[in-house]
Image (cartoon, rainbow over all chains, first blue to last red):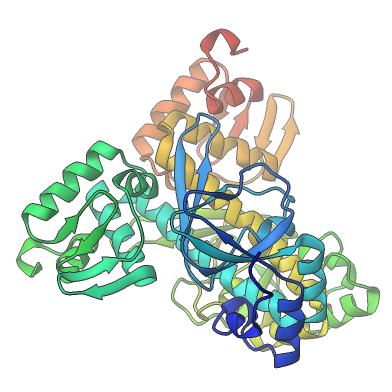
Length: 237
Length: 237
């Protein structure tokens, strides 16, 4: 087990924004920290929600499986973000699997400790409300996209969302800074591996993206925006 | 303007669950109540989120319009539910239109008053978190359905969700207790008016549903569950 975390790790986490130093000390004092190697389940869909979680480093994929075994990627969690915490306040059961897609450091708080922290520091509940409100909007946008847009635009939107969340400037353009497979993109956009492969190949031929087995680089972000927003071809850079 | 509301109207509202009588008095003292006739916009997408809202009576449709003008019904709000409140805590802009589909009585709290009430009564923030968590799950489920299920199952799921939310037992079966058009069902399921009409007509021929211009009655809820869960035909009642 790593040494007890320094309260400084909480700085910049939206869940704890606006807390004074002693409140941050209280929060970190209740936390358990652990290293989680890539490819490990942090929690599994259907398990009792024993704890709330926040990611310090790495990347976690949140995947929900339907009754027929079909999967949807709900979100990739990055450093500083909370995950698996809402279940404490809803039905007490994790609604999805959380799997590390890189080596991770996570903090967690037992459910009772998280509830008590929110009692002592109401700013945490308000912060959580803002975070969840933002995620609700994001899922509503995705629902609208899947319901009304053709697949090429949905794939462009999904990649742009990942660029905003985890883009890193590299020589060739902007890289999505964690391992991302074509199957992941299919499960984020309600499409199939076949369609994602065909679409990415066409975009590669046009010099818009470059994609390896687990890596995507956007070479021409403006061209991707044009596709996402369905601008007429003449306006496409 | 109706007379100042009685704190009793707040009883049974999940947003104010667990509040003592004096806290409920504080909440209701800050509220404005008004009658809103059917077919009126309570607020519009893109407007500053001036207030948080709760419905006392009637039904409100929450509709989001995409950049291309395509619409998605995000939710029907029923008596006792909050709506348009999260925007205060996110970007301060209503993310959708709220339109009354029946004559309504609503309460609203100016944004600053709602924020101050949550400061004074932290249980409100925790309740809001549980409510939003539940709605996030619902939208995640719909995203999974739209992404992975064929349209007939999505329509069955949407109707069953409405039955749970607003079902009323009638002689012929269970009625969805507010005006619901086929276009609404299309905008709830990422399908088209044509597809919804074709599907409902087939179900009517099988005696599963009965639908008028603005009314849906489920005659055989178990048959609808069988369709939603994709049970083999032999298992269908």
